[in-house]
Amino acid sequence: MKILAVSGSPRKNGNTETLLASFLKGAEEAGAETKFVRLADIPFKNCKGCNACHKNGKCIIKDELTPLFDEILASDILVLASPIYSMTVTAEMKGFIDRGQFIWAQKCVLKSLVFDEEHLKTHLGIFFSTAGQDVPKLFDAAFPPMRAFFNDAGFPYRENILFPGMDTKLGGKTTPELREYAHARGKEITEEMMRK
Image 1 (cartoon, rainbow, N blue to C red):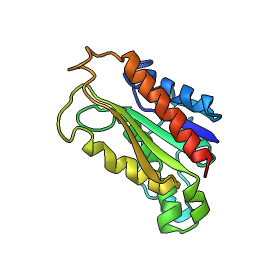
Image 2 (cartoon, rainbow, N blue to C red):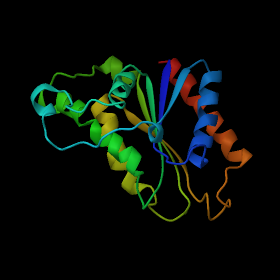
Image 3 (cartoon, one colour):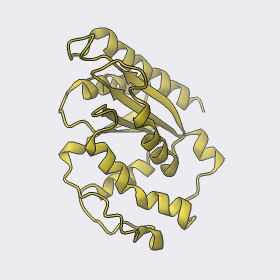
Image 4 (cartoon, rainbow, N blue to C red):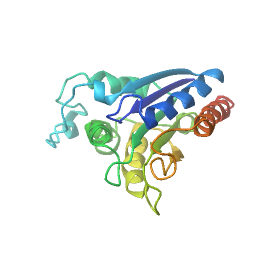
């Protein structure tokens, strides 16, 4: 079981990454092989919207982000982690998702990328997020881009692990209880997927 976690937080070891580390530790204890990638450490260019990928399924941009997409497609569980900035995912995460347009082109335009029932049964997409506020519909604008990318890349999107109110209730810091919850979810989800 391979789990790839991609962090879109610009804050190294902030709330999102601290809780994500607990999640991955729980997954490892359940037997998963995990890898963590921080988008802020990868210099990459944004999608140009040129639609060249619609012709051959390949992105014309070649940079340090390019190999990450191969790792994604080789993973069993994909965790996309982002704090909520201005009511949606960070610029880093959105830029990454937009660069995945070539995967959409392979699947929806060229029909060269197909995921069978067995693949969909044994793969999972997870949105992992923190937010300073705790207001109604706080995470709602982040769900559609997550759903789009997971669907394109062959990861059924069935899990949201969300932590609202980090500033208003907790003074901007994680707590042992939140870390324990993230750890437990990592272990539970991994065990469930390994039974499939």
